[in-house]
Image (tube, rainbow, N blue to C red; front, side, top):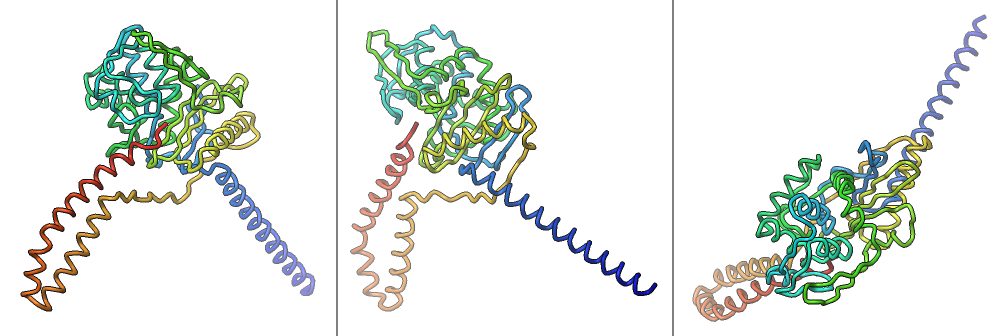
Length: 362
């Protein structure tokens, strides 16, 4: 009897060990599966939502604040259409014309209709067009940005802030992948925006007769028939960004991608998100929100390097002064011309900073 009890007890212990081991392996498998899912989307943040309800179907770091780049222009377009007649004519200001941008470049004094500027801004992502649109509504980008932030808040994009109409780098400008998906969802309610972002190429004319041809920066319009439109963005600080809508049967899915390092991966990320969203809707997968440790890498500008050099120079001068006061005074007099040079370098560095921020824009 005792022997049987001992055997039974040992059997129970072994069963427990097997169950614990099985659960442990299942946990490892589940974690590795989640990790592999996240690795499929290499961008810093991404999300796919259902276009009617706004429910999240899959997300990776959906609430991390990143730079919006030219996805900003979706809000610019909505604010303009809320207040302006698309047939109204706008004169391109000097401020708008000199805004750093991709080609085609708009010229000071040219006149274009609102709808034509929207085509140029949303299809080719020309920053000059966005600035001209902002000025047509509010007189200045600064005043227009306030309207943009009001619009973002009204549609639930609470973790978004704009400082300009184009998406060029600006202090305090940010967005989240989730907010970007909400912005795309709202923009689809505007028939003109929906039509423009689904257009592969377009030709518009200035009032003076100059023809301006633009081709869409959204490559998925040529490779994925389900995609009904989208908006790209790129700056050095933001990296590659993209938001799009896809028609999957009776459902509209919206995918948003922020902080993708490689341009070609942008299309892979978006396609993966749309496919994953479709799987969730068809009950093949469960909705998931995945978080990784996203570090904000600081952008080091040339001007900061100049400050560092100045600091090193001060330390060196201090050591020299301790060794020989007279020699230190003599060096101080000789160093005055070099200070002027240093100021000149610093000024050039700041200009370089502004120039770098404007390069590589889409």
